[in-house]
Image 1 (tube, rainbow, N blue to C red):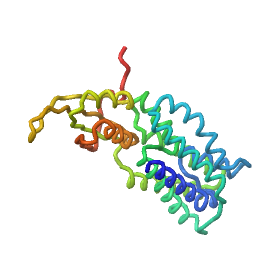
Image 2 (cartoon, one colour):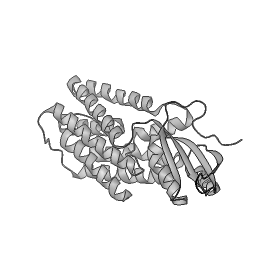
Image 3 (cartoon, rainbow, N blue to C red):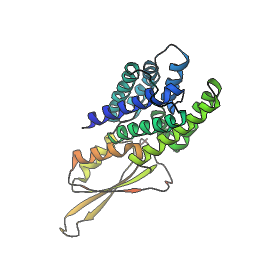
Image 4 (cartoon, one colour):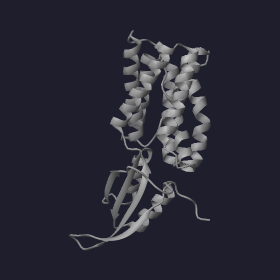
Length: 271
């Protein structure tokens, strides 16, 4: 089902780009926006530009981030790149503002579906995740700053009306992604399981976060349990849920919003 979701989400993004945004010179956020820009002002196809720009980031991400997450992301980038190359650029709607809103909504829907399938569409998301693991820096601020650069470049290359429409598109995309996936920047995961040591080893091997483990007793059964607590970013949620299920499908898991994190959010290797 994950592959079906990734394919569906990626194709929805392609439709939003080629049928609504690109015909009106409206850009998306991130590297996708830069790819669209190159496709408009140069002979390079948008799909080819998207693949070439994402390739080095995906290679770096494969080494720095979870392999399953990156493999799903690579698959999504390939589908989007091929789709942008094949699907013709046709303006479905004549009004650029409506196209910006609807195209942004389609892009957000596609990105949200890909996120829910434990992947990403590449681009600035990969950069943000890598940077956040080296420096405890909010991904949202970083992505917003990089998207601001895309908007400003759009204003100088095209028109400032197009730049403002790009801003609308990026805003709508972000809101739809939050509605479909999760609007929490960081989440606290509490796992209650009888397979505490096995769960610990599996999570530490596949997840770039630390864990706190406590002993517990079942209130009804009086059996011994382990309670594992960790804080993750929203991008890691589906990956963590899959990892937990692989070890103990019967584990009790509580996921809550985290308002603020103090101290080291990323795991450090012991010296």
